[in-house]
Image 1 (cartoon, rainbow, N blue to C red):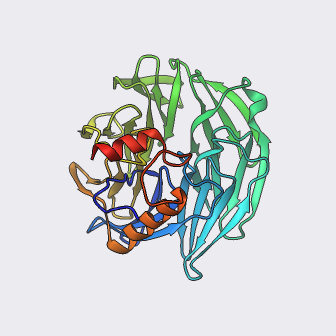
Image 2: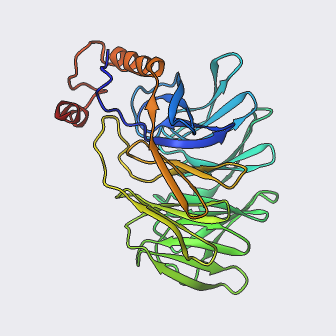
Length: 350
Protein backbone atom coordinates (compact mmCIF):
# COMPACT_ATOMS: atom_id res chain seq x y z
CA UNK A 1 0.00 0.00 0.00
CA UNK A 2 1.04 3.60 -0.53
CA UNK A 3 3.10 5.00 2.35
CA UNK A 4 1.76 8.15 3.97
CA UNK A 5 4.95 10.16 3.38
CA UNK A 6 4.29 10.10 -0.37
CA UNK A 7 2.79 13.42 -1.45
CA UNK A 8 -0.49 13.03 -3.30
CA UNK A 9 -2.23 16.19 -4.44
CA UNK A 10 -5.75 16.92 -3.23
CA UNK A 11 -6.35 19.44 -6.02
CA UNK A 12 -9.95 19.41 -7.19
CA UNK A 13 -12.07 19.52 -10.33
CA UNK A 14 -15.25 20.80 -8.64
CA UNK A 15 -16.32 21.86 -5.16
CA UNK A 16 -19.39 22.88 -3.12
CA UNK A 17 -20.11 23.96 0.45
CA UNK A 18 -22.41 22.03 2.79
CA UNK A 19 -22.90 22.19 6.57
CA UNK A 20 -19.51 23.49 7.63
CA UNK A 21 -17.53 21.45 5.13
CA UNK A 22 -16.59 21.11 1.48
CA UNK A 23 -17.52 18.32 -0.89
CA UNK A 24 -15.16 17.98 -3.83
CA UNK A 25 -14.00 15.60 -6.55
CA UNK A 26 -10.31 14.89 -7.01
CA UNK A 27 -8.80 16.43 -10.17
CA UNK A 28 -7.16 13.18 -11.35
CA UNK A 29 -8.73 10.25 -9.47
CA UNK A 30 -12.38 9.09 -9.18
CA UNK A 31 -12.70 10.17 -5.54
CA UNK A 32 -15.54 12.07 -3.88
CA UNK A 33 -14.24 13.71 -0.71
CA UNK A 34 -15.53 15.78 2.19
CA UNK A 35 -13.24 18.01 4.27
CA UNK A 36 -13.96 19.82 7.51
CA UNK A 37 -13.36 23.55 7.01
CA UNK A 38 -12.28 24.23 10.58
CA UNK A 39 -9.68 21.46 10.79
CA UNK A 40 -8.84 21.04 7.11
CA UNK A 41 -9.08 17.27 7.58
CA UNK A 42 -10.58 15.08 4.88
CA UNK A 43 -13.12 13.01 6.80
CA UNK A 44 -14.89 11.15 3.98
CA UNK A 45 -13.59 9.55 0.78
CA UNK A 46 -15.88 7.63 -1.57
CA UNK A 47 -14.67 5.85 -4.69
CA UNK A 48 -16.79 6.88 -7.68
CA UNK A 49 -17.64 3.82 -9.80
CA UNK A 50 -16.97 5.37 -13.20
CA UNK A 51 -15.33 3.74 -16.18
CA UNK A 52 -11.97 5.55 -15.78
CA UNK A 53 -9.38 4.97 -13.06
CA UNK A 54 -7.28 8.05 -13.73
CA UNK A 55 -8.20 11.03 -15.90
CA UNK A 56 -8.04 14.80 -15.68
CA UNK A 57 -11.36 16.40 -14.74
CA UNK A 58 -13.73 13.45 -14.85
CA UNK A 59 -16.36 15.67 -13.24
CA UNK A 60 -16.65 19.46 -13.49
CA UNK A 61 -19.66 20.22 -11.29
CA UNK A 62 -20.92 19.16 -7.86
CA UNK A 63 -24.20 20.04 -6.14
CA UNK A 64 -25.25 19.02 -2.62
CA UNK A 65 -28.94 18.87 -1.72
CA UNK A 66 -30.27 17.03 1.35
CA UNK A 67 -29.40 13.34 0.85
CA UNK A 68 -27.89 13.74 -2.63
CA UNK A 69 -24.52 14.77 -4.01
CA UNK A 70 -24.88 15.32 -7.77
CA UNK A 71 -21.76 15.09 -9.95
CA UNK A 72 -21.74 16.67 -13.42
CA UNK A 73 -19.55 14.77 -15.93
CA UNK A 74 -16.85 16.17 -18.16
CA UNK A 75 -14.59 13.28 -19.16
CA UNK A 76 -16.81 10.41 -18.07
CA UNK A 77 -20.12 9.16 -19.43
CA UNK A 78 -22.68 9.61 -16.67
CA UNK A 79 -24.16 12.01 -14.18
CA UNK A 80 -23.37 10.36 -10.85
CA UNK A 81 -25.49 10.77 -7.72
CA UNK A 82 -24.17 9.78 -4.33
CA UNK A 83 -26.99 8.81 -1.96
CA UNK A 84 -25.76 9.44 1.56
CA UNK A 85 -28.26 7.31 3.50
CA UNK A 86 -27.65 4.30 1.24
CA UNK A 87 -23.92 4.96 0.88
CA UNK A 88 -24.12 4.21 -2.82
CA UNK A 89 -23.85 5.81 -6.25
CA UNK A 90 -26.40 5.73 -9.04
CA UNK A 91 -25.73 6.51 -12.69
CA UNK A 92 -27.74 8.57 -15.13
CA UNK A 93 -26.41 8.15 -18.65
CA UNK A 94 -25.86 11.09 -20.98
CA UNK A 95 -26.82 10.45 -24.60
CA UNK A 96 -23.96 10.56 -27.11
CA UNK A 97 -21.38 11.28 -24.41
CA UNK A 98 -18.11 12.88 -25.51
CA UNK A 99 -14.88 14.22 -23.99
CA UNK A 100 -15.05 17.58 -22.20
CA UNK A 101 -18.85 17.54 -22.09
CA UNK A 102 -19.72 20.11 -19.42
CA UNK A 103 -17.98 22.74 -17.28
CA UNK A 104 -20.20 23.13 -14.24
CA UNK A 105 -23.82 24.18 -13.88
CA UNK A 106 -26.15 27.07 -13.16
CA UNK A 107 -28.90 26.39 -10.61
CA UNK A 108 -32.39 27.50 -11.66
CA UNK A 109 -35.10 26.25 -9.28
CA UNK A 110 -35.09 22.44 -9.34
CA UNK A 111 -33.02 22.44 -12.53
CA UNK A 112 -29.29 22.50 -13.08
CA UNK A 113 -28.36 24.09 -16.42
CA UNK A 114 -25.29 22.12 -17.45
CA UNK A 115 -22.76 24.53 -18.89
CA UNK A 116 -21.80 22.99 -22.23
CA UNK A 117 -18.15 22.79 -23.18
CA UNK A 118 -17.96 20.40 -26.16
CA UNK A 119 -21.33 18.68 -25.77
CA UNK A 120 -23.43 19.81 -28.73
CA UNK A 121 -26.80 20.33 -27.05
CA UNK A 122 -28.12 22.57 -24.32
CA UNK A 123 -28.90 20.21 -21.41
CA UNK A 124 -30.54 20.63 -18.04
CA UNK A 125 -30.98 18.20 -15.16
CA UNK A 126 -33.74 18.13 -12.55
CA UNK A 127 -32.08 17.11 -9.29
CA UNK A 128 -35.46 16.25 -7.69
CA UNK A 129 -37.01 14.07 -10.41
CA UNK A 130 -33.60 13.16 -11.91
CA UNK A 131 -34.89 13.96 -15.38
CA UNK A 132 -32.44 14.92 -18.13
CA UNK A 133 -33.82 17.33 -20.73
CA UNK A 134 -32.07 17.82 -24.07
CA UNK A 135 -32.65 21.07 -25.93
CA UNK A 136 -31.19 23.23 -28.68
CA UNK A 137 -28.11 22.24 -30.69
CA UNK A 138 -25.87 25.26 -30.09
CA UNK A 139 -23.16 24.04 -32.46
CA UNK A 140 -25.34 25.05 -35.42
CA UNK A 141 -24.59 28.69 -34.51
CA UNK A 142 -20.79 28.46 -34.38
CA UNK A 143 -17.79 27.15 -36.29
CA UNK A 144 -17.00 23.44 -36.33
CA UNK A 145 -14.36 23.27 -33.59
CA UNK A 146 -15.70 26.01 -31.33
CA UNK A 147 -16.33 25.31 -27.65
CA UNK A 148 -18.09 27.12 -24.82
CA UNK A 149 -15.51 28.11 -22.22
CA UNK A 150 -17.89 29.67 -19.66
CA UNK A 151 -21.56 30.45 -19.08
CA UNK A 152 -23.70 32.57 -16.75
CA UNK A 153 -27.33 33.56 -16.29
CA UNK A 154 -28.62 37.08 -16.99
CA UNK A 155 -32.30 37.46 -16.07
CA UNK A 156 -34.12 34.95 -18.32
CA UNK A 157 -31.17 34.30 -20.63
CA UNK A 158 -28.06 32.16 -20.42
CA UNK A 159 -24.90 33.78 -21.78
CA UNK A 160 -22.40 31.31 -23.25
CA UNK A 161 -18.87 32.49 -24.02
CA UNK A 162 -17.35 31.06 -27.19
CA UNK A 163 -13.67 30.54 -26.45
CA UNK A 164 -11.22 32.75 -28.36
CA UNK A 165 -14.00 34.64 -30.20
CA UNK A 166 -15.53 38.11 -29.87
CA UNK A 167 -19.11 36.93 -29.49
CA UNK A 168 -21.33 34.97 -27.12
CA UNK A 169 -24.43 32.82 -27.54
CA UNK A 170 -27.57 34.05 -25.83
CA UNK A 171 -29.96 31.23 -24.98
CA UNK A 172 -33.57 31.89 -23.97
CA UNK A 173 -34.66 28.87 -21.93
CA UNK A 174 -38.39 29.57 -22.26
CA UNK A 175 -38.43 30.11 -26.01
CA UNK A 176 -35.62 27.59 -26.67
CA UNK A 177 -34.05 30.23 -28.87
CA UNK A 178 -30.32 30.81 -29.31
CA UNK A 179 -28.54 33.64 -31.08
CA UNK A 180 -25.06 35.06 -31.58
CA UNK A 181 -24.26 38.39 -29.98
CA UNK A 182 -21.05 40.36 -30.57
CA UNK A 183 -19.55 42.11 -27.53
CA UNK A 184 -18.12 45.43 -28.76
CA UNK A 185 -14.59 46.03 -27.52
CA UNK A 186 -13.89 42.33 -26.87
CA UNK A 187 -11.38 40.44 -29.04
CA UNK A 188 -10.71 36.94 -27.66
CA UNK A 189 -13.18 36.02 -24.94
CA UNK A 190 -12.26 33.39 -22.39
CA UNK A 191 -14.48 33.86 -19.33
CA UNK A 192 -17.77 35.59 -18.55
CA UNK A 193 -19.87 36.34 -15.46
CA UNK A 194 -22.93 38.57 -15.00
CA UNK A 195 -23.93 40.91 -12.19
CA UNK A 196 -26.74 43.51 -12.25
CA UNK A 197 -26.77 44.59 -15.92
CA UNK A 198 -23.01 44.23 -16.17
CA UNK A 199 -21.00 41.52 -17.90
CA UNK A 200 -17.44 40.86 -16.73
CA UNK A 201 -15.23 39.32 -19.41
CA UNK A 202 -11.63 38.12 -19.53
CA UNK A 203 -10.09 39.06 -22.89
CA UNK A 204 -7.10 36.88 -23.74
CA UNK A 205 -5.79 39.11 -26.53
CA UNK A 206 -4.82 42.06 -24.34
CA UNK A 207 -4.93 40.04 -21.09
CA UNK A 208 -7.49 42.29 -19.41
CA UNK A 209 -10.59 41.89 -17.28
CA UNK A 210 -13.32 44.11 -18.73
CA UNK A 211 -16.66 45.36 -17.44
CA UNK A 212 -19.34 45.64 -20.10
CA UNK A 213 -22.54 47.65 -19.55
CA UNK A 214 -25.58 45.84 -20.97
CA UNK A 215 -27.64 49.04 -21.32
CA UNK A 216 -25.09 51.13 -23.22
CA UNK A 217 -23.35 48.22 -24.97
CA UNK A 218 -19.98 49.67 -24.02
CA UNK A 219 -16.90 48.69 -22.03
CA UNK A 220 -16.91 50.85 -18.90
CA UNK A 221 -13.66 49.65 -17.32
CA UNK A 222 -10.66 47.53 -18.25
CA UNK A 223 -8.00 46.18 -15.87
CA UNK A 224 -4.75 44.62 -17.06
CA UNK A 225 -4.13 41.21 -15.44
CA UNK A 226 -1.34 39.79 -17.59
CA UNK A 227 -2.19 36.07 -17.45
CA UNK A 228 -2.66 33.90 -20.53
CA UNK A 229 -6.01 32.54 -19.42
CA UNK A 230 -8.02 31.95 -16.25
CA UNK A 231 -11.29 30.99 -14.63
CA UNK A 232 -13.76 33.66 -13.58
CA UNK A 233 -16.44 33.41 -10.88
CA UNK A 234 -19.00 35.71 -9.29
CA UNK A 235 -19.23 34.88 -5.58
CA UNK A 236 -20.72 36.83 -2.68
CA UNK A 237 -20.89 40.00 -4.82
CA UNK A 238 -17.21 39.66 -5.69
CA UNK A 239 -15.46 38.83 -8.98
CA UNK A 240 -12.81 36.11 -8.55
CA UNK A 241 -10.19 35.35 -11.21
CA UNK A 242 -7.60 32.57 -10.97
CA UNK A 243 -4.84 31.85 -13.49
CA UNK A 244 -4.38 28.72 -15.60
CA UNK A 245 -0.59 28.76 -15.81
CA UNK A 246 0.42 29.85 -12.29
CA UNK A 247 -0.84 29.61 -8.72
CA UNK A 248 -2.31 33.10 -8.66
CA UNK A 249 -5.76 34.45 -7.86
CA UNK A 250 -7.28 37.89 -7.34
CA UNK A 251 -10.64 39.15 -6.00
CA UNK A 252 -12.34 42.34 -7.26
CA UNK A 253 -15.36 44.32 -6.12
CA UNK A 254 -18.04 45.48 -8.57
CA UNK A 255 -15.89 48.47 -9.55
CA UNK A 256 -12.96 46.18 -10.40
CA UNK A 257 -10.92 47.38 -7.46
CA UNK A 258 -8.71 44.67 -5.92
CA UNK A 259 -10.08 43.30 -2.63
CA UNK A 260 -7.69 40.37 -2.16
CA UNK A 261 -4.76 38.91 -4.07
CA UNK A 262 -2.46 35.93 -3.60
CA UNK A 263 0.35 34.20 -5.47
CA UNK A 264 2.17 31.04 -4.34
CA UNK A 265 4.83 28.88 -5.93
CA UNK A 266 3.73 25.49 -7.29
CA UNK A 267 4.70 22.51 -5.15
CA UNK A 268 5.16 19.12 -6.81
CA UNK A 269 2.76 16.29 -6.02
CA UNK A 270 1.71 13.04 -7.62
CA UNK A 271 -1.75 12.98 -9.21
CA UNK A 272 -1.75 16.77 -9.44
CA UNK A 273 -3.96 18.81 -11.74
CA UNK A 274 -2.32 19.99 -14.95
CA UNK A 275 -3.83 23.44 -14.38
CA UNK A 276 -3.59 25.91 -11.52
CA UNK A 277 -7.13 27.33 -11.75
CA UNK A 278 -8.98 27.23 -8.44
CA UNK A 279 -12.51 25.90 -7.97
CA UNK A 280 -14.51 28.14 -5.61
CA UNK A 281 -17.67 27.89 -3.56
CA UNK A 282 -19.45 30.05 -0.97
CA UNK A 283 -21.48 29.69 2.21
CA UNK A 284 -24.52 31.59 3.46
CA UNK A 285 -22.44 33.97 5.63
CA UNK A 286 -20.39 35.59 2.90
CA UNK A 287 -17.31 33.35 3.15
CA UNK A 288 -15.66 32.04 -0.01
CA UNK A 289 -13.64 28.82 -0.15
CA UNK A 290 -11.33 27.20 -2.66
CA UNK A 291 -8.69 24.48 -2.91
CA UNK A 292 -5.54 25.25 -4.86
CA UNK A 293 -3.10 23.03 -6.74
CA UNK A 294 -0.91 22.76 -3.60
CA UNK A 295 -3.73 21.19 -1.55
CA UNK A 296 -4.32 24.43 0.36
CA UNK A 297 -7.82 25.16 1.62
CA UNK A 298 -8.26 28.90 1.06
CA UNK A 299 -10.86 31.03 2.82
CA UNK A 300 -11.55 34.71 2.42
CA UNK A 301 -14.19 37.05 3.78
CA UNK A 302 -13.92 40.76 3.14
CA UNK A 303 -10.19 41.50 3.09
CA UNK A 304 -9.22 38.59 5.32
CA UNK A 305 -7.41 35.64 3.71
CA UNK A 306 -6.41 32.40 5.41
CA UNK A 307 -5.20 29.05 4.16
CA UNK A 308 -4.29 25.66 5.59
CA UNK A 309 -3.10 22.34 4.23
CA UNK A 310 -5.71 19.69 3.61
CA UNK A 311 -4.83 16.54 5.51
CA UNK A 312 -6.22 13.01 5.13
CA UNK A 313 -7.13 11.15 8.29
CA UNK A 314 -5.70 7.63 8.59
CA UNK A 315 -8.87 5.91 7.42
CA UNK A 316 -9.12 8.03 4.26
CA UNK A 317 -5.41 7.70 3.56
CA UNK A 318 -5.62 3.89 3.71
CA UNK A 319 -8.64 3.89 1.41
CA UNK A 320 -6.86 6.02 -1.21
CA UNK A 321 -3.62 4.05 -0.83
CA UNK A 322 -5.41 0.74 -1.29
CA UNK A 323 -7.29 2.11 -4.27
CA UNK A 324 -4.10 3.19 -6.00
CA UNK A 325 -2.40 -0.12 -5.16
CA UNK A 326 -5.35 -2.01 -6.67
CA UNK A 327 -5.12 0.10 -9.81
CA UNK A 328 -1.43 -0.74 -10.15
CA UNK A 329 -2.11 -4.44 -9.39
CA UNK A 330 1.14 -4.49 -7.40
CA UNK A 331 2.78 -2.86 -4.39
CA UNK A 332 5.63 -1.05 -6.09
CA UNK A 333 5.77 2.29 -7.85
CA UNK A 334 6.44 1.89 -11.56
CA UNK A 335 5.17 3.31 -14.78
CA UNK A 336 2.01 1.78 -16.31
CA UNK A 337 -1.16 2.97 -18.00
CA UNK A 338 -2.37 4.56 -14.76
CA UNK A 339 0.82 5.70 -13.05
CA UNK A 340 2.76 7.57 -15.74
CA UNK A 341 6.39 8.65 -15.93
CA UNK A 342 5.64 12.09 -14.50
CA UNK A 343 4.03 10.55 -11.39
CA UNK A 344 6.93 8.11 -11.02
CA UNK A 345 9.63 10.78 -11.20
CA UNK A 346 7.81 13.04 -8.74
CA UNK A 347 7.47 10.18 -6.27
CA UNK A 348 11.13 9.13 -6.58
CA UNK A 349 12.15 12.77 -6.10
CA UNK A 350 10.61 12.78 -2.62
